[in-house]
Length: 531
Image (cartoon, rainbow, N blue to C red; front, side, top):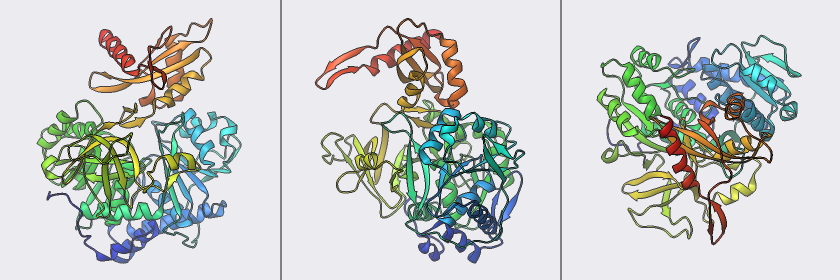
């Protein structure tokens, strides 16, 4: 495709998109009968999707959900998920997006912190029994829940919460406002539990408009494959951009490369996004036949074999292009230019976005080519961390730039992303704060201290844990690993849990510090010797 740069939206009316309701209303006005969204069960045009969304808003309103209330969405990709996101926005409610890979510990923390009044989940989704997991969450963490709304529900009660079947109700008023709180994503921060990134409707709608412009999603025949989960910013920002362009959204409830390849050919998919590994697996499923309909394949580098994976996808005419984004700035914040098409980072989608590279300690602006912290100011930025003003204050400079915590350098016409400044772990396509895993391990009876690092195992990056036992305890690695399997998402589960007498330390001007670099070396040696 042509050089990526902020482009003029094909329908000038899109300049008026300030809320999620505006997006639906614009498509009903301009392309009411055009295909809007489909999954394995249903296919709707834009008029039908708008009516479904309004019906779901009425259902939520009938359960007492109103402006500012929190509604947890714990669902696989489906048309209902998309409609519910618009429904919450119509009420001015906050959609709390719950990662489908989360298990009891993570979902419990999220429900407790978000104070969600309702949770919408699915029955009959083969890979995950969401209702069974919900019932296992301690009642205290579910205390704010007043009801569970079930897609294809087969129960009337879960853990004392009444279950209401997901079905559209009567019409209800549109209370969407540009400055209304809209949704949250979970992200790892400096605490043991994830922070909740709060966006207002204006930031979601404006970013959707800007990305739709860059990717020319208003062009006739634009069809996107939503294979990345909508519960995160990567999947949702892409779907919202497609909606802002009036494109056709084909939803895949769980990633399967063979099915994805078949859908690309069946529906003449023009746009997809995913990790480098996802693109490579789709390319492998192509069986040597190019994907001629694709105009854009956006990727984020999550594996050590990223360059090899991207080259493989490029050979199948997938036209991969590097991206940059975060929960706070939203995914698809920047697109790699042609000169560096397969690099991470790029040119911001919004013509109003600003960025600078600064020394992380002194905040001094650095020159082109010098590595430093990436600072951002843009319409797509989040409003703050939900119910956490202290963390919000720390995240911004005095002049309003978001401190991304990412190492990058300016290379005209944009920037190149290098890595995280701190010790964040990139596992299974997600950025994970090691303290999330460490706090879980330290809550186990035998564990006094825990440290978690990332290590390469073949072509993947996995967590590797070191622990120090409590006095007179002899932790069993198999039992600890089993505890992790029952409570943590698969990508967070350590590949090994090794007991040490003590952690390696060093004395610095700021005190005694654990040598995480030495732990990484030890983990790598152990993993290699085991292989």
